[in-house]
Structure formats: structure tokens, C-alpha cells
Image (cartoon, rainbow, N blue to C red; front, side, top):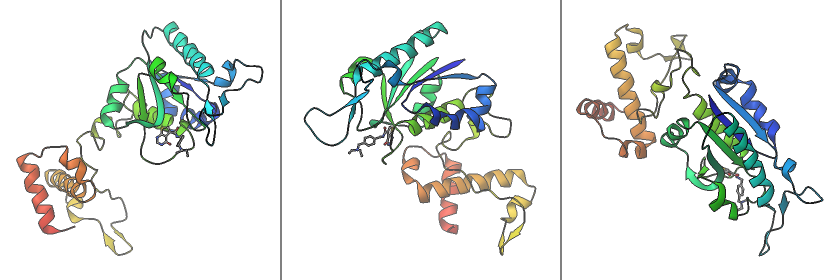
Length: 250
Ligand code: 9D3
């Protein structure tokens, strides 16, 4: 079973992933284990401080190294007691490697993950060389802390675990696995505010439907995320479909 430990000043935020959805169901089914550690419980000075003012001056506070390293050490110990020899220790930080499907797949293959979700301006840099295997960012925008990023990693990793998804959802069918955006989806009614469902989807011709969906996926990726197409080669059949999409305009 995948072991996940998170070091955070706001453990209650993780109620969101433990009680709801795919991550909640997977926890119930014991497909993974989650333990939260509050660095406050590892504070060393008389005031139980976990942050202090930055050397060199400037605004805000910096997380002190010692309580964090102790909390991470406790998480490591716990993982060891469950049989995890070497957990991957990940620091969620805006300075990290951008999370993508390849990194998610890498993390899914680990026996154990220990994640540090920081607050304030960041954590003392001397921890970087000592304890982290990876620094990871979830995108170029400013969050208030690492917790939501840690939950994004958890959600993406847990849904890859065997048995986490029902038959209907299946991780291998996900967008990004084939390097393309998803095709459009429709449900009843057939006519909504004057807009019709594309007739091919009502035809019952499954070969045609599969072809149409692939064409739409290629076309939408070309329109909206040309960077994804540049990373992926197209088969001869895919090139034909994409050229058709461009000609038809959509
Ligand atoms: C406003 C503070 N910024 C000064 C230039 C730096 C800053 C410090 C701490 C910005 C954000 C944060 C808190 N963010 C995270 O801990 C974080 C994060 C993010 O903000 N964006 C994308 N991925 C991540 S992973 C962790």
C-alpha cells in the first residue's frame, strides 16, 4: 500500500481529499495511507516557534529548518515501520519542477511519499540539500501555501493506483496519457437551446464515432495547446484527420 505523509501547519485542509471523491474512496478501500504531521509539534524553542525573520531583511517570515527536519524524520520513521525503505521526499515550492503526467507516473511508482507543504515566504534553504529528493511546483501562479499543491499531487497519484477508479473512469483513457486534449462530450437532450448533438454520435456507427472523437481531440489540441502537439509525433492516419479538421474549420 502506498504510504503518504504530509508535513503541514494546516492538517485540517486535507479533510478535503480524505472525505470526498476518488481520494476519499481509495482511502476507505485502503489503497493508500495518509498521515499528517504538524511542524508545530516539533518546535524546539520556548515559544514553540516554527518561523522566524529572514536573514538579510525583507518582508514576511521563513520556516525554521529544525522543526521541519524533525517532522520529516518522524514521517520517515513511520514509513520505515510500514516497510518503506526509502520514501521520496518532495518539497512543494514555486521554485520546483513543473508537475506533469510523466512526474505523476514516476511518483505513483514509489512505495512512499513524504511531502512538505510550506507556508510564509518559504523554508530555510539549508533543508534543500539535506532532505528533499524533489522540489515540485504545480504551475506559474501564486498560492498561499503548499497544501493545495500537495493535494493536487495526491489526487493525481492516487487516481493512478490499481482499483482507485471504477470501470467507467479508467486512468489509461485519461487525456494526457495519449498526449492530446479530450474530445467534446454530449448528453441528453438532443437539442439544447437550438444546439444539436453532432449527428455522428447518434449514428450508432462506432468506427465513425471513434474516428470523429480522435479528429476532435487532434483539432482541439492543435487550436488550444499546440505545445502538446509539438511534443508528440502523429501517425499518418492522425495527420490526415488533423488536416481534415483544419479544412472543415471548427
Ligand atoms: C508572495 C510571496 N512570494 C514572494 C515573491 C513568494 C511565494 C512564497 C510562497 C509565493 C508563493 C508561496 C506559497 N506557494 C507554495 O508554497 C507553492 C506553490 C505555488 O504558490 N504555486 C505553484 N505551485 C506551488 S507548490 C507550493
